[in-house]
Length: 80
Image 1 (spheres, one colour):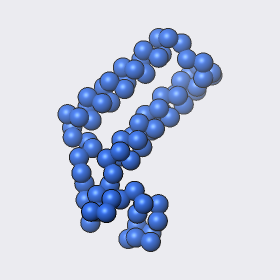
Image 2: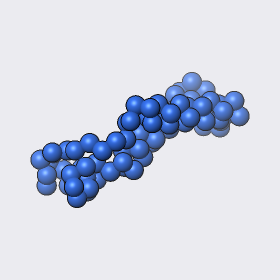
Image 3: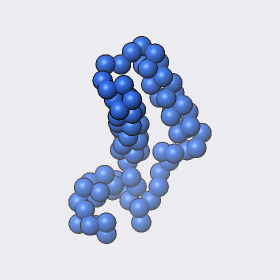
């Protein structure tokens, strides 16, 4: 176990003490999708997505990517 008390956290930390960029981006992407689909389901009561909402989701992806790059969200951060 590590200082966070979980082996899972340790598995996602690279040998040099940094969190994997891929893991960080993947978690962020999953959270974006879960929030979108959960909101869509609560609002419309179905997971059958219309083309207009697919366009909206693609727009969310574009803005998520651009903001992440501009804000340097996925740069290396040490856990030490």
